[in-house]
Length: 161
Image (cartoon, rainbow, N blue to C red; front, top):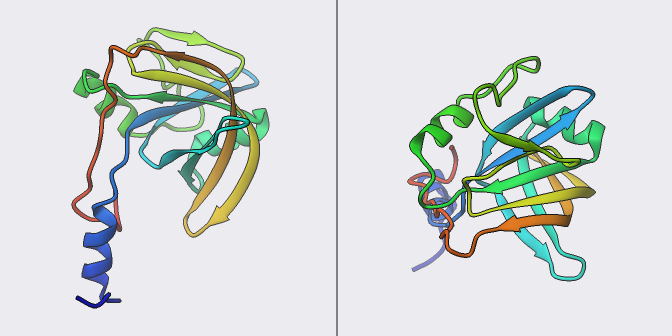
């Protein structure tokens, strides 16, 4: 079967790429925010580096750029749907995304405790690509719970969330 450049074929094929889900957080100068993220991946063993994509203009982007740090809180299968609904809705730049939530305010940003892991990262690279910015972060602190399986997500359409 030949490759197709038809939009529907591209959308269906991209949708088959599995991803996790997590809450990407950052803080700077008394402001903090978080967003639901699904485009992240380990990119290096030595040093340990992950990449995460952020749609341009999301409030977390400016906080990552200002602080040069972020936390990726990897969702566990057991994470409540409230986690996804709350952080998936988005927040204004001055709104506290964590009001009513228990977080550990780390030097990298807020860390949530109910996920599969939390990775504290220092930005070590940045790539402008399409409608997203990809940040590379060297993992310099982490907390993981091997008893909690990570959440895995498959999209129906790889051209939208």
